[in-house]
Length: 114
Length: 116
Image (cartoon, rainbow over all chains, first blue to last red):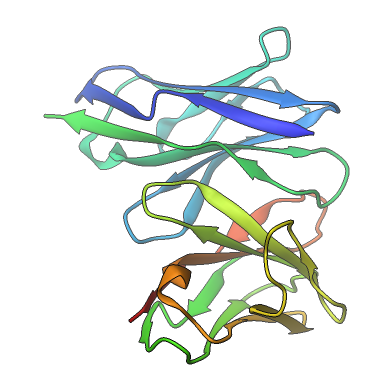
């Protein structure tokens, strides 16, 4: 069984401020972890993924996430928010070892205040 | 690379009719495709997994006779919503995997279905 919990359905930050979106996972086997971004009425775009290599993963648009096994966390961060970062962010987990079902979190809507 | 398209991007149909949504992998062969449903302001729920040339595997609670999935080739999967009702109105998203070893899914842009 696997699950993802995203803390905070809405997060507001000022432009230029640190972005921190929280994600905790549960998995009975070593997980693959993903962060996706979704703009209104669009599909999902992969920001970054963890697949058991480096625990600090760098993604697109200046985002990064750190896999912390002891905390079962995979929080997403960006040092300085930009207006274009306003979107819905989904954390997701799948089991390692082939195509497995991907389970998505409930999403966090990021608002960037000018 | 790794582009997935969906057609149509939005469709309005009358209750009782059927609607077909296409999902295509444009620059790679997709051995596995996935269909998701997303209700407004909610997360994605996996409906089914389809492998080329075989029957789709449906998630618990998804009516296989209502949501017909066909994965006839390595670049095309279709979802047909049969006898659509207003409660079937939703955002449908497909994803495709290339099986290249990364096990990453590439998502289509989604199809907005409205049943009147």
